[in-house]
Length: 231
Image 1 (cartoon, rainbow, N blue to C red):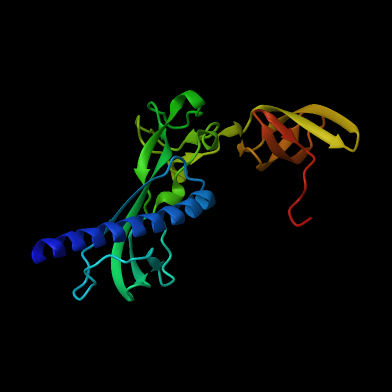
Image 2 (cartoon, rainbow, N blue to C red):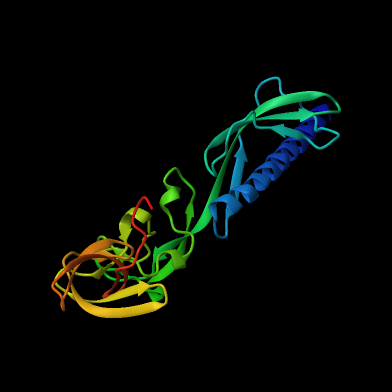
């Protein structure tokens, strides 16, 4: 009977610790999700075996948890101190928690240099790791970019795999837009450099032959009015 009672008490304590640790990480997850913009996060956690000399009976009040300043990043092990007010005791436990998030992935093969559209994208559930800062949380962040290399279907996309597409190519005819106050004008030019969105490139005015600097604002379009660096 005594052995049975002790086993029941141990199980009750294990459940209490597991629930308290789970609630702790759930609150941490809420803050991390808001900060990182994670989509559809899912949390798993486990508590490793209690150390020798740990209490054997559950706490009569909700357990208090202190992480001792350790920053949980959505993955990995964390050492936690659990404190009980009645009866008074505390114990250090090691716990591991991992977050799984929805990350943008290719829904089909994407060829190198191909402009990415919404129909090419989907989502895959992946665990948060040290490299997760390079993932995309929303398809809107990827639409309009292009692949640096051939990407297989269902492959999770990362920022180092994609690049803004070339909107202007060297030797191509472009429309040069100029804005000066309320006056708006346009002329034709020839790009002297390749350019992506936001890049400043050299453009030859086909009418005057003058070389100007202009900012790429769209496919085949540049603006000769922009804010120079340092101003």
